[in-house]
Length: 341
Image (cartoon, rainbow, N blue to C red):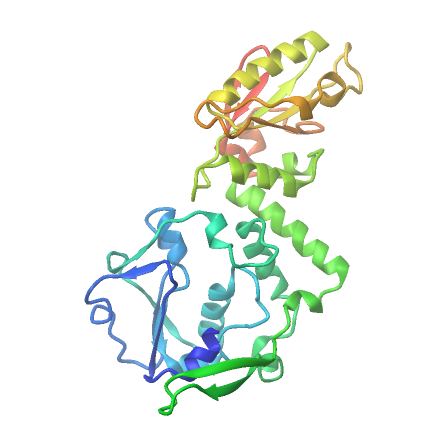
């Protein structure tokens, strides 16, 4: 739709904003475009808070730059990465020079992920989908060379005598880039994307990710639903239980008491001992039967995530030498091994 709209723009400058973006008076005057190779954009890394990160995608540029790179890659049909891909191609192919918008001149209207992906098909986790799109687009032919053949085509019908109102009907719809991947390639893209989000966004160490008993996709959904709206600051608890079955239950009860107050997601492992060889957490307790509501939100529950083992047996500082994610975890001593993020 953006590519189609650009063809009917009545000006040589294109301003693209989303429906959840507000512009202050004097926005355009504050961002002059006097050079054909210069454009303005937002950078999510420069956002001052989590809400401003969602301004990523707003741009103001000469139409010639947009057309030089064939506009948006229409094979990205789900949420995420379409704007980043466009900016990357602008700077790599058109040698465009980007400048940053003044963040005081535009604002993002806050809303949750459900609203963000409401009109998308099969997008259960926007963060994962964004990473999947970034990986998929590297595996298909470059948009520059296939745009003319793969871009959506329309049949236009005038709805007013002055041609100012047109009806566009799709003649040929651009196909999703995922249809060009084999099943093995798709599953690999999905796996890598989920692991990136778990590690880079939520700070779960690689060693913990590799030892999960349940699918990582389920864990990410649990973390997402347990976090506050529009925030990645979910507190996680890592607990290693040991010794006898009684010790395991007492340690688990202690961990759950902490979870109710502050830690909606608890990663739990049972360490081998003389009294409990080859015993898993599910041998001791039925995890599916635990439904303890959070103190701050009675509609959400503490979630236990079983981990086969915690590979980090030294102090966390030592473990952080091969994975910096361990630096985000605070270690506490008690009757069981307890790690807090």
